[in-house]
Structure formats: C-alpha cells, structure tokens
Amino acid sequence: MSRNDALRAARLRRGWRTLESAAAALQEHGQQLLDDRQFTVSARTWRRWEGDRPGWPPEETAVVLHDALGRWPEDLGFTTPPGWIRPEHHEEADVKRRAFVSVTAAALAPGPVGRQHVDPALIDYFQQQLEGHYRADMFLGPHDLIGTVSAQYQLIDKLVRSATGETRRGLLRVGAAYAALVGWLYQDAGDMDGASFWRGVTQEIAMRSRDPNLIGYSLVNQAQVRTDLGDGHAVIDLCEAALDDAHRLASKVRVMSLQQQAHGASLVGDRPAVDQLIDQADGLLASVDDDLPWGNACRRTPGYLEVQRATCYGRLGLGAEAGALWAQVLDVVPETARRDRGVYMARQATAAAVAREPDQAVDIARTVATIAVETRSARMRRELVTLERAMRPWQDAPVGRDLREVLAPVTGRG
Image (cartoon, rainbow, N blue to C red; front, side, top):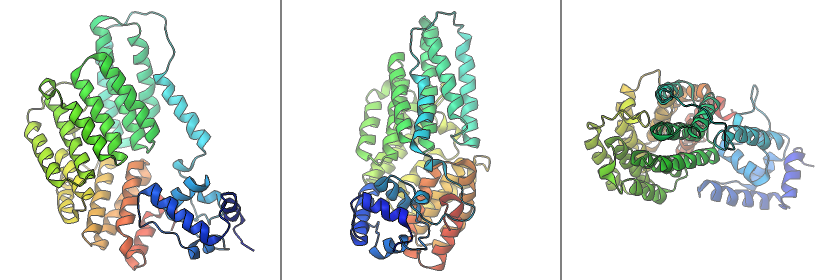
C-alpha cells in the first residue's frame, strides 16, 4: 500500500489510474506549461513520490504539480525540508486574492467624490515622493512598497476628480507614473495579473493626459509585461507603436522604446536587430536631458544599455558574450543596489553555465541566493530557475549537488 496517500488520492481524483499514466500526463502538462520539451517525469520518480520517502521536488516540478493537481508539495505528502518556511508564492489562493483586491481597489475607487480645493504645489510634492520610492525599490524590493505606492495613487486619483485645468493635467501625469511603478512592483513580485492590471491603468491615465511622452512610456510598460511572458512579437508591436511619432518624443522615451524592442528581437532570435536597436539607443543616450520624474533608469542605472544587451545575449544563448558583458556591468553597479546586482549576477551565472563553466556558475549563485532571500524578488527566483535549467547537464555531478545546496534557502529543498 502506498505510504504517500495524499499524492495517491490527488492522482486518482485527476483520473490518473496508474503510476505510468500519471507520470506521462504530468510530463506532458509540464512541457506545455513551461514550454520546455526537456521537462520529464518518469514512472520510477512517481513511484518514489508515493513511497515512504518521497523527497522534495524541484521548484519547476512543484509549479507543474500545483497547476495540474491544485495543491503545493507540502499538501501532497512530500517530505518538507528541515527549517523550511512556506514561501509567499505558496500562500492559499484566497489570501492572495484578498491582498490583490485590497490594493487594486486604489485604482477603482467609486466616484464622484466631494469637491475640494487642490493646490498646484501638490504636483511637486508627489513628484518628489516618487523619486524616493524609486530609490527605496532598489533597496527593499517590491513587497514592502506596493501598499504605500498604491495608497498614494488612490489619493492622486481622488485629487484629479476635483482639480481643474493645468493642475488636473499635472496630477494625471504624475498619477500615470505612480500607476506604472505599482505595475512594476507587481511584476517584480511575480504577479503578472496584478502587473497587467496596473499597466492598463497607466495606459488609461496616459491617454487621458494627452501627453505623447507618457503614452509612449505606457506602451513600453505594456511591452515589459509581454517580455516577461516571452511574447517577442507583441513586444516589437508595442515598441513600434510607441515610436510611430518618434519626432514628438523625448530622447528618454525613444531610448526606452528601442531597448525594449531589442528584448523583443532577442525573444524571436534576431541578434542583428538586437545590436542595431541598442546601438541606436546608445546614440540617443547623451541627449537625455528632460526633467520628467519617471523612467529615469537609463540615467540612474550604471551601464544601462549594456545590461540590456547582456540580457538579450543571454536569451540568445550567447554565453561567452553575455558573461563578458555582465563582468563589465557588475564592476560599476554599486553594492547598495542589492536587488539589481542579484538579478544581474543570476544572469551572469546562467551565462557561465551556457559557456560550460559550471563551477563559476555555482560560485556566483552563492551570492545570488543570499540576495534572493533578503529581497524576496520573484524576478530573481525566476532567474535562478533559468540557471537550474542551464545546469541540467551537471545535475548528477558534484557541482550539480553543490548548486542544489546553494539554492536550498530559495527553493526550499536540499
């Protein structure tokens, strides 16, 4: 009789009558979900899962199990590692949904509201606050800021409903920037539903503001979401739409659009377009001189365009080229920018693995794992999952076991 009755019961509820059919069905489900034909589950593995020592599955396998069976490994009888703490992305769906509804209510406050005088000085106040939020995001990560920034957006929205003339238009412009930041925070936290919602709010307010720069910025924001979803053609479409009236746009918006289009090109495997687009953006970088309070990553981030080029090269499987660029970038990124350094180093580690330097990849991953635990960045966790895939050729070697040990605090398994 099976020792792991929880998994056996879930299997039978799914209609998988045998271990062999369960393994085959989960493998097919995982290949479709992850878009990875290398994802495999054997009948032998499933038999061990239903035995008295089921172990702990890899993170991507846990995701596939949850998607197929509706439960996480700890609820399916798997052996929980010592000291393991239930990760945030394993919270019950209703808890997550309540949190989402609570925050997004900031964008859906019913009107009309009571009329009040709105001082134009409030525009500068919110703009100054925005710069502080950008800095805090670099140090804190997304989770501690979502509530704060969305609450300020709610106040801006309330003021917009009373303001008139230039004050109203100014508040619309700053409100779009706040909505864009909330969307980014959701994206970094790994909640693509929340990110898409707030990117849509950003685009709506940008259109209402009639500001061509904000409209272009909102399209780039939408393209960022499509990049994370792996939809290269949509990224290109959105960025081309943003550049339709390029002569009306500030240099900063053109730089943002061109570099994001390069990400789209990398997703469809077009390296010449990647280099052409980033080189074109590089030619505009020196002319970025506006005082717009949003979208200043190109000025604030050291090696901004080389970060984009290295990321694109990594997607294209150019391990050596990407690794060399990441080494240059990390020489100029300050230690205080913990979240960004962690993401860049995770990509550097993957580049090392692709270049068949597994020991170097594991050495880099040691630092990344510490930063990932501190910042709770889902973006960084996704990069580490990509690293695990790149390290599959060595999964049974000592270096593969070292990687699993290094990533245990992030993945929850040893």
